[in-house]
Length: 438
Ligand code: ADP
Ligand code: ASP
Ligand code: MG
Image 1 (cartoon, rainbow, N blue to C red):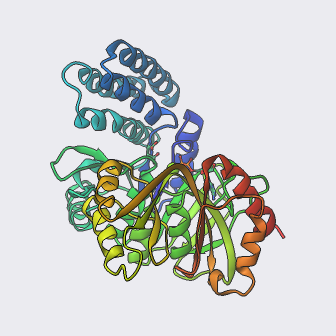
Image 2 (cartoon, rainbow, N blue to C red):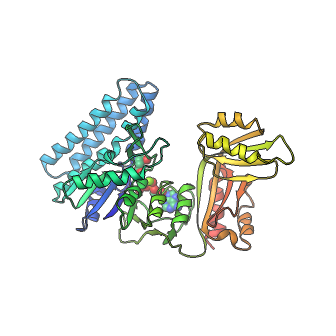
Image 3 (spheres, rainbow, N blue to C red):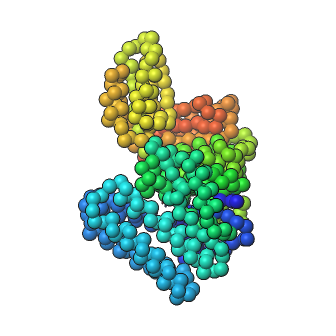
């Protein structure tokens, strides 16, 4: 069974939901993962933020605006008065849940429960649309099988066991509809796979049910060779290897949640990126084979902090790197880029939750400098670091831009440069002009 995921814009209006229904109803059984309607998760995050700041009036105002918007959607979405009533009842029930969370103490569970309601709304409404139109659709609650562990990593073993159980226990259907993004955590509370996480839900379920293909339907015709939000004249890529796509997603290509590729790669399940507004376009195929040699694309990841540690011992400082890395391991903080000399090391992190503790422990071993508001621009392709003259091309492309750090040759697929975030657009455009469009 294929897994098809539709993103926020794809289900972002009544017309688009109808288009998705047309698109999926080809008679082949499938499992459909939906995001919240576009804008909804942002509003829910806003509500949670107001509640955290104890500004209940502001929270209630956003809730009421959002609720009215959904009444309008259900009124337009269904044809019959019965279904319009049913839609209203769904919306009213979910908003009752949200409103009940405005009284009482605010906690992470409150926040996660509120933020989860966008996907619950879209899937419940969409299932009713399918039923109204005579299709055999079934609503599957993702909270019955999607789970993360105490380290917030997806628990693929649990997901595999439980999605099978849920499917076995449910009425047979042609179209199973479930929520992206949301899951339970190790405490059994509602949690999520982080913003944009519906893509990850799709490949996790795909891997769990040994799907033949996962399709990720969005608002663009596939993976582009640069970020179309910052760079002009980007081009669609027909095919990427799992490794190339994983690096691009990890280093900021917003079209895929950073972890989406991993479950697909583990089980060798092809992932196809498709455009809901242009379904006949073949999109981008992500599979085990690469589509050949050379540079494929550039992506950029913001919110990077660089830490430079200069050892107090100038010579024979063996053990220095081990001591440094152990501190990051202890605070469960992954390192992205790294550059070393005998007595100093520079590295980057994107999770600054424990930055203060990390810095104070690092000071035991050396002088520490911290720089924030940085961006990693990542150039991805096949065997690019091995090509002669390639370093010269990259440096030439970036000759106007001060590079803070560079990582070259650590991977066959990736060359990364660290720049100030204020230079991101210029960096991406320069790489595009010099490396991609000639
Ligand atoms: P969805 O809501 O369907 O998950 P997203 O907004 O998360 O959609 O992802 C699609 C968007 O990602 C595109 O509209 C585009 O602006 C942006 N994007 C960033 N980098 C790329 C890229 N390399 N290729 C294609 N789209 C990209
Ligand atoms: N609705 C969630 C978000 O906006 C998840 C997703 O769209 O993938 O982040
Ligand atoms: Mg997305």
